[in-house]
Length: 212
Image 1 (cartoon, rainbow, N blue to C red):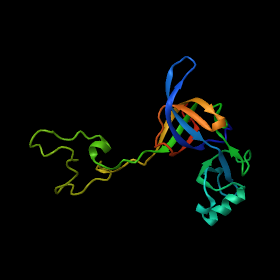
Image 2 (image 1 turned 45 degrees about the vertical axis):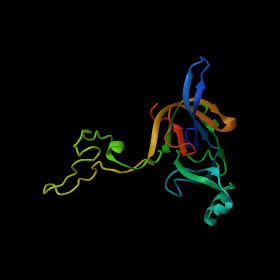
Image 3 (image 1 turned 135 degrees about the vertical axis):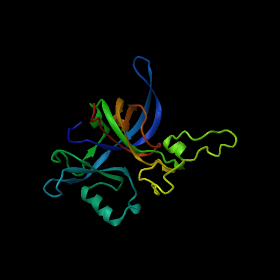
Image 4 (image 1 turned 30 degrees about the vertical axis):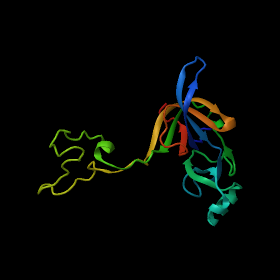
């Protein structure tokens, strides 16, 4: 993979079992990575930084705004459902309209995968923060409640950051150091050992590991 390309866009397909040559069964997550099209190049001279804008997943033209239709036509690409921008060291090796595929990850052993976690809706403190809760005995009157949050005359307010019930999930999350088990360039598939955040069909980004 070029040292300039740090990230590719993809989609989580699901989980399965992969059998190694030794016969050992390994739990893997299947990712559809790319093809990603370079929609725009941003340079230090013009925008003040070097970056590539990549597009992933086809989208019908009738569902694309007029301004975005013109933006895609400049690159010669069809409308894409996902547009993301990634910093690079140098944009010179890349051309607008160029396609980047999972084949660029063939030499990579470890990757970091970023996705949006599954939404859990409104949850209480026991599930959201792991509070133990109170006794379940008869007459306890305190089971899954959060307890005191700062009432009375002192401090007479709730401190910022207090762990309370609320919306849980749909957070951006990155799993580091996932081992690449197999790369299938023909089907644009990447098999990684371990779990990846998000539901099946969710958009993810894959980059070579920054800590390995």
